[in-house]
Amino acid sequence: MTSTATHSDKNFFSADGKGTSVFRLFRNRFLTGLCVALSLLTLVPLFSIVILVIQNGCPLLSANLFTQLPPAPGMDGGGFGNAILGTLVMVGISLVFSVPLGILAAIFVNEYAPVSWLASAVRFVAKLLTGIPSIICGVFAFAAVVMTTHKFSALAGGIALAILILPTILLTAEQALLGVPYAFREASFGVGATPFQTIWRIVLPEAMPAIMTGVMLAVARAAGETAPVLFTALFSQNWIKGIMEPTASLSVLIYNFASLPYAYHIKLAWSASLVLVALVTLSNILAQVIFAPKHR
Amino acid sequence: MACLLASVLTITLLAFIVGEILFKAWPAISKFGLGFITGIQWSPNREVFGVLPVLIGTAASSFLALLLALPLGLAIALFLSEDFLPPAIRQIIRFVVELLAAIPSVVYGLWGIFVVIPLVQKYGALVAAKLGFIPFLAGPAYGNSLLTASLVLALMVLPTITAISRSSLVAVPYALREGSYALGATRWETILSVIIPTAAPGIVASGILAFGRAMGETMAVAMLIGNSQRLSWSLLSPSNTLSALLANQFAEADGIQVSALMYAAALLVLLTLGVNIAGEAVLRRTQKATAGLR
Image (cartoon, rainbow over all chains, first blue to last red; front, side, top):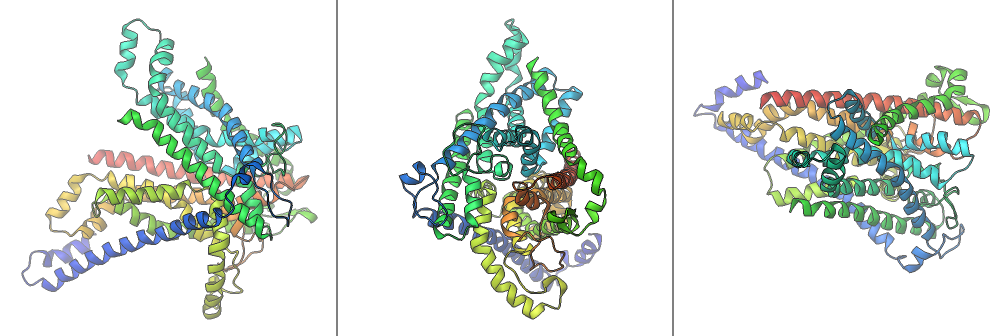
């Protein structure tokens, strides 16, 4: 850096540094242009994805898609009602496990013992869990649930998803609790409330909208994931009968049908992509909307 | 104390995950030992398992993706942190990048099959014919290749790079910019010799964390990389990654193959944890460093 500085020092203030200042201006413009070009370049694939998903997903869009079962290989007609239901069921199971665990741990970290070694350990582990590949959640659920019950099941898929979204819920809930002004707690203690009453009747209700934002983001994440349910819930051509049965999901349906040589199945995969992207986007928007009134 | 219990559970969860995977992998670990890592054969029928080509594929695809995504991500991050554009347009760009992050992996895979694979096949053949003497570009060119997977991976890690680089660029104190402008520097002289060097550790951290994400990314890679365990130097030939290997083989595996896959999963956990801890450590040091400048 120093060498360029001394080099340009000569021309910075000299009257006859005209050529250099033209060069400097040109370089300035050129780099700005390059930056614009690179940014626009990333828009191309994004638009391509969005346009193709809408274009290829729309033709089959009808009520049948949501109410009928996938067709047999080589056949036309049908839909993926069972996969939509399966995705919703597994996301529901994952919430049952991860929401209480995540919120309780966040309360401990932020309210009961914010500076203890245990709290920093929880934060550290949650950070590490966010970095674990999603397929590892599937491998773990396979080892812990599928190999013990000897069955691919919606429960195993739900547990895999629960591990995936736990850190999201925990870390957003902790931020939500952190956002509650300290004066609220002081006021509550001031009128004689116990710590328990303060947390459950003052702090938690105040933080609830922000916590729900985190939960909706987690739902969006879980609904879109394939790897954790791929070999835990497997897939099914039929409606879900119980949570201990192999279960279809939208994402696995896309993966399975994308590589089939049947045109109709590939169209179904595109339609499923459209529905899945819509579902994920809806959850994301919902997450923003829930939190929005708090900001005003 | 339910809250205490939940915290302890969260901490033990990570240990439980690693422990369970190692436990199920133990038959393979004790049978194949380190030969598993250096072996170049993966044939479940003959019960021979080696993951060296897969490890190389994992590293190569992630590195290539990073190489492609880092300039793009940095350009966008600069756009979002400097005042090139009115705030409204910046908001739109930011929204677009966040949208990239929200698209499910499997949809990237589907898009890759119908858009990127034909492109790579078409132009790959041309390149291999002209430049095939370079080992990295040797033919025959396949659509399902390391290059295809890396291109899509680059898109997928772009939001990570943009978000973290942006926050480290924004954290550069305004006084430094003012000082540079006061000396007569142009905008880009300021960016290149003041802002980027100051934010460099954060940009490096974004790269490391994006590398970790790319290594663990599964579905799009499994659909695009061709799933071949053969060693090859060419970017245009099929390859495989640890996560894609797991995705493709787990459902039908039994016996010692399950154990071997668990071993591979344990390696993946180890690698991604290592990369992530390194990235977090760099990031933490950056935050401390820029805090001192304020």
